[in-house]
Image (cartoon, rainbow, N blue to C red; front, side, top):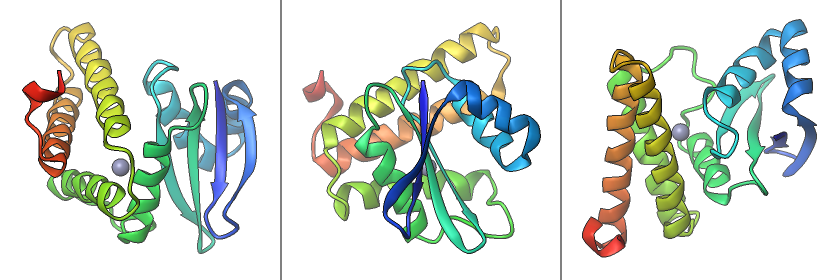
Length: 169
Ligand SMILES: [Zn+2]
């Protein structure tokens, strides 16, 4: 699996490396440690993104599961546009959940992300979270909360698309 780092101001990729080198970087730099954690939480075929602010600049990290997932990219851009990134205090659970919903809505309505791609990607997250929760013997409460939050994101998307779940299947 490859990881790509996108410089938002330059509007270009500034780094593309294999996850194994990122693991090495994580050993020497704290900044890359959280990047590593994010991208090793799920199996490699799950598209993931992460954005952060460093020295006043915004960067997005994305994995490559064949190619970079456009929804992941637009979702991260949405977080930046909505002012979610680089704040001093971390949002609480409820606020963080709302930020995810707002970023999805922005990606869909403003950045014109393809709804089916969004739906499939969120579906993959749900499956992964479900598996992880089962593997924990139904003990990973945080994982279950994220699963519930992700199903809420799917529900919002279906509402934005104006369809019922049954029509999608
Ligand atoms: Zn997000």
